[in-house]
Length: 284
Image 1: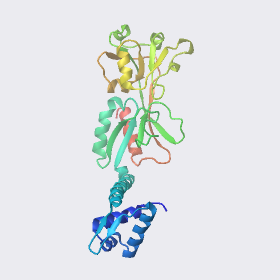
Image 2 (image 1 turned 45 degrees about the vertical axis):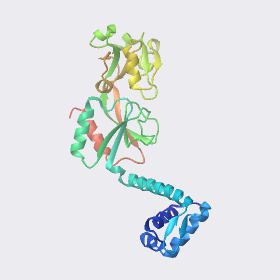
Image 3 (image 1 turned 60 degrees about the horizontal axis):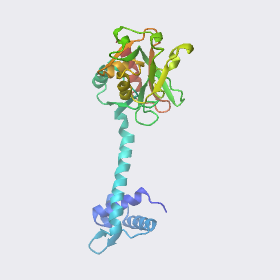
Image 4 (image 1 turned 90 degrees about the horizontal axis):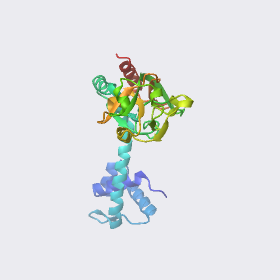
């Protein structure tokens, strides 16, 4: 016989109320049902859990241990139910490297003013789905297409590509650079979540690459002058670093910014987020 939640609730009720009679009243069942449920739990565990005298019901040593575990299990179940039924009062938006760049703060403020009933949380998760697949967010801001058919997405705007350089790099003196200026450099890339790969260059003029998996590490290496990086404009807005400068890559195609969600479980606030982000990227 398996241990069931009703067994644990019965044990906790008896311990809290101090008698089978009062436990029955609390649980809304008969005293006989309480006795049968406790007996079933003791058979399942193979130990005696309670001492019953004419005056009181007290846990045995084993009962004390089981009771402590039962309280934790029931509390976890209550948290699970609460999360499942009230989680829609919160909105978690994941992102990998940068959230929304210069639109991040306006989005947070406009959302708070228009939807005070739904708390907004931005969550950085450096995964291809920015936390969607991992269950860490309800919606995600991604800057590369999601091939997984379990997800839907929509483009909310475009961002320029910028080159990140060491501040003392000769190219840092320019107002902008071209792809050809970078072809002989070592490009630092994150192939899981980054927006730029060597395929951005013509096949006969592609830079060498080194791989990295975190934006802070990316900036640290670039500051040394050993590598350069090419990224979406939002990275420059969100991550300013002494020793690193950003310059527009004037002949590179822009980066599409997408809002993504689970196809079979869209968040009720998804459409409102989509409209707000699209308006911000359009300058509205």
